[in-house]
Amino acid sequence: MSAIFPKWTNRLPMMIIVGVLLVGTAVTAGVWYYFTPKYTRVGYQPIQPVPFSHATHAGQLGLDCRYCHTGVEKSWFSNIPAASTCMNCHNQVLKDDPRLTLVRESAASGKPIPWVQVHKVPDFVYFNHSVHVNRGISCVECHGPVDQMEEVYHAKPLSMAFCLECHRHPETKVRPLDKITDLNWRPESEAAQLEFGRRAREEWRVEALQNCSACHR
Amino acid sequence: MRYFLVLFGITVLAVMGIAGRRLDDGGGTTRKPPIYVFPDMDRQLKLRPQEPNAFFPNGVSSQLPPPGTIARSEPLRVGDEAFYRYQDVPVFTGFVSGTTNFVEHNPIPVTAQVMQRGQERYAIHCAPCHGAVGDGNGITRKIGAMPVVGNLHEKRIVSMADGELFYVITHGRNLMGAYGPNIPPEDRWAIIWYVRALQRSRLGTLDDVPQELRASLNP
Image 1: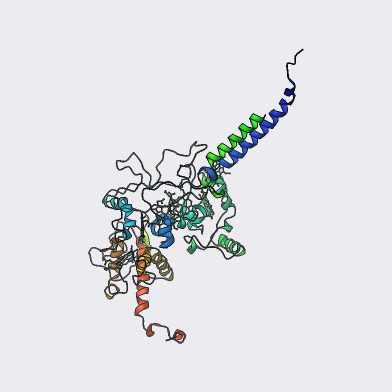
Image 2: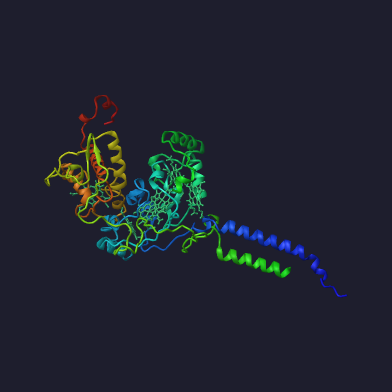
């Protein structure tokens, strides 16, 4: 009688188990690695309508972030400057440069420059710049080394895990209020940072906010 | 089994090849917009500031107030008095009320706090052009990008009324742009206090130095 199940089928269950394990591991690893904001957002660097460079303006010229992003200490969102703010300098600097055509037109007509927004939390998240900036959290914690970027890119994941990591231990990140926009500032040592952080937390009454309604209200 | 393993290997390599690595893992930046894995309620029908918006004819969500309207908003407190933004008072206009004459003196009393605020705001908004000491040698002049910058130690500017300085900051003058939209009035007055302090630092004499500190000066 010929075999209905040839001999190799004895190995079939083993093969299926190995195969499922392999595929399962690969899919898990793939989701783990690729389905988080660390991959889906970080590195996003859109082409902007004007080749504006933070490395030139904030890095080399040393302009303070608040020269342009004036609302960042007062309001929940950080404004992109109006074209007239650029024209304060560019009415003399690179007066006829073709790269700045759009800026000149915008300043004359009042029609905004269509900058592409890079950082954007979902609409169900409540975020507030002034609360962070006035409690000694620097731009660099959430935006990376903007003063070295020729074009802004998404440097930090801005995921819930990322926000909570700091909210659990704000004393590791708070810094003196006059160093908020100094992106290259480093604490003298880890111990000095912790010591300052603990003191600042007490003085400014910084809470470690982890309840859901802080960010989802 | 061999075919399965080969296929598996090729798939894994293909996925990794196409998807690349994370940025913090040595991957590069990308022009592609973020991927939303679960886009459920990420974007809702609400206005966000400074976004394009089809509802208004000019297509922007952050509308300017209609011409001629003035925000009522919070009053500005100076000492015991409270001023509202629609009032014609020196704090908001730099003019003596009801006239177009510049007020002679800064309407906000000076304190150590105001002076510090002025110093900080001066460093942010004025120092790039006028320089840290106000002599017009800011970074834009130094690199030769900006030929004309005012020197705040000029006699004409030293003898200006405080109200005129306020007017220059608010509306700009000649080649200098208007800073009214960027700096709130109380900060403009704080900056003026600091500019006056800078000017004084060049015009001071030995008589201005308190008696007990004179010994510490090296002539």
